[in-house]
Image (cartoon, rainbow, N blue to C red; front, side, top):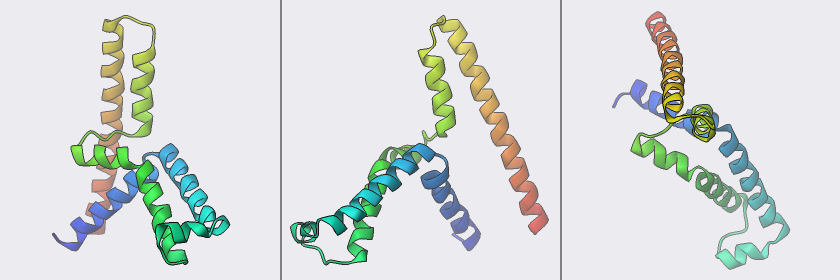
Length: 134
């Protein structure tokens, strides 16, 4: 694996963890901050966990909390079933709508085709940028 492929992989991972799921990201950050400040408010937590009293321990447990919130995201990424939060909301709205199954199927097809077209546009722009950089 060369550096370009590694960089693309890291960028994609960061996009998934920080930008594709803004609600999960916000909840994870808030939970991490609560844990961080919880260690400040209750120093006995260090003793209960048998950890050193320092910023490294606070950072570690805050990171674990953030990744715990994103556990579904990580699972979906490894199984290949990952969708953006916006697309998931669209599909859930269609599913909850009080319309016939045939109409839902048409709306699913329309939503997915719009999503694919948007991805195609983004991919084309990314390819254009790569070609101009080379």
